[in-house]
Length: 437
Ligand SMILES: [Zn+2]
Image (cartoon, rainbow, N blue to C red; front, top):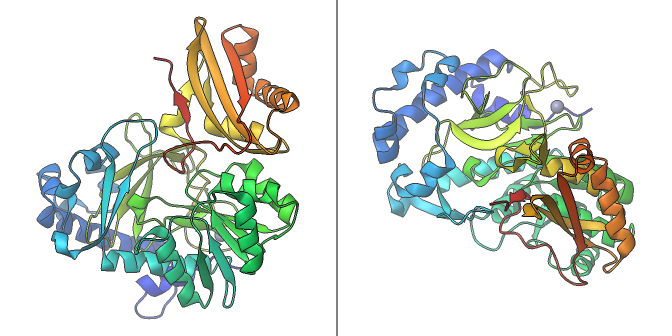
């Protein structure tokens, strides 16, 4: 098994005298970078000057002392994005505006300098060598027309690898994208899980790429399995978000979770209720601090994603940490029928194994005095009562749904979208919406 190429990347970023990489060296590097970040942010960002009043780099005696520093939230960025800036606006080379699904609040704005973007290109270059190599052609099913967009930075990273990135943008019509895959002789796809599944199911086994990288949303196991079955390709997943500078971590061949971008990010797992660190291996909220960001560093940023560090060494043998695949987002786990919790992941794992399902949306509403789970699915064969029955059946075996149905405390409302209609959502992230009030 090939060791994650991120190890060599991290080694080059950290080790200056050519000796080996170890956890101690990584952590010493991260501590020094955290101190630099704190000083930089406090000296330059009006937000952090106020937020970190009474705290300084001297308070960071060791990594564990970071817990004394307050969290930064998405709401903080939404409210006053410009106050995070540590450089003049003329030094900002890229502003990303993020809509948040299911809320009507202000969008988030995130700023990057040329140097910040260079760090991302460098990470993409090495991260992509997990699954792509010289001469390979990679179709990018992510936004990529604007300079500095995720697709654009990925093309640049691939170029350094000797591979060719072919920008495409999100899939609008599966048949058209499949034609492009054949015409462009595509070896690898990078895209959103449901969109890639939809391509594979529409392809009848044709145009199969050698490998696929799924990103921008949580990846149901059911989707990875289906892609392997339909295309016989290797499937890798990437974890990242705009606030991380797009890239956060990528799986190695062992497929046990993401190896993290440890030269640029320091990641913690905390109890979302108490804010305290969880013990090694336990689930909690992913929190990160940027280590090299100049334009808009983030200190202890709460992602809202739930995961854990996988204890022990990855089978690939790296010293890098492994973050388990993110399965849930905090705001997407809903209490139903006055007992039990339901998440989008539960629904995904039940519905995506069904043949012909391309995508679906889910929301909770109140109907006739009880909770109702409303599913709108996009399928290969629309107007098909069998499809509705199959989805209802798959949902009914999810334990929390089964028990609520038995108590008469929940109803299901499943419908299929008409031919040609796709599931509409504001972002790539699929969430279980709560419209009960
Ligand atoms: Zn590994």
